[in-house]
Amino acid sequence: MTHLSETLDSAAFTARLRQAAEHIQSRTDWLSQLDAAVGDGDHGVTMGRVCEAILTTLAAPPADDLAALCGAVGWAVMCTDGGSTSPLFGSFLTGIGDGLTPPTPLTTMALARAFDAGLTNLRRQTSAKPGDKTMVDALVPAVAALQRAATDGATIATALSAAATAAAAGAEATRPLKAAFGRARNLGERTVGHLDPGAASVALFFEGFAQ
Ligand SMILES: [Mg+2]
Image (cartoon, rainbow, N blue to C red; front, side):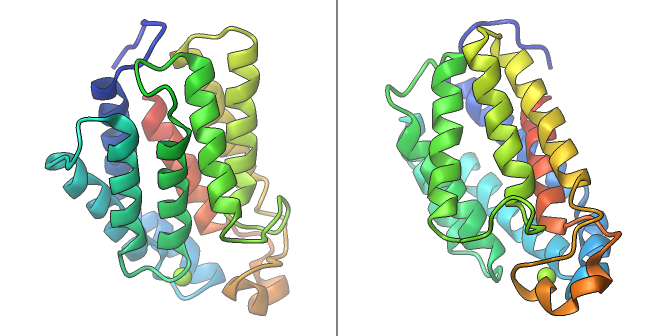
């Protein structure tokens, strides 16, 4: 899909959110393989549930207003059974909803602000910092890249592409790290050499959203 417009309306935003969820769903086996190396191997199943909640909510939107819709999607995600993953992804999405002011159509700057609000809300749920080998390692650089692109006056497509590249690099950078957080921390040195599954999910999210 090519998006050459300078703003993003509700329909285009939800289409991108759907693409992100479908993209993650297409890689759940891979996510479980990653988690099997550093955790209990359930991350793909969990992300499958998270994406199902996103897609089910988008299929019968409970609100016309994009901010309210993002809030509803986030709550649906939070209510799924998914250990620490669903509250984190859910708070990211509800935070995006909170940050969508004014709602639509979104400029690159408004989109960057909304994603930053999502990150802020997620970081209220976890004290994980960049370098701890968690999803934060992909999310922080992705949001920073989006903000940088917005400041530079980039189009939405260019900014999202930069965010996806930064998220992928952030996920890749978790490979040499030793897990310092969550359940994977117990495995310590054994996590070195493996991608963090949560960071990989965030990278897939941005890759799908940017398509
Ligand atoms: Mg797990």
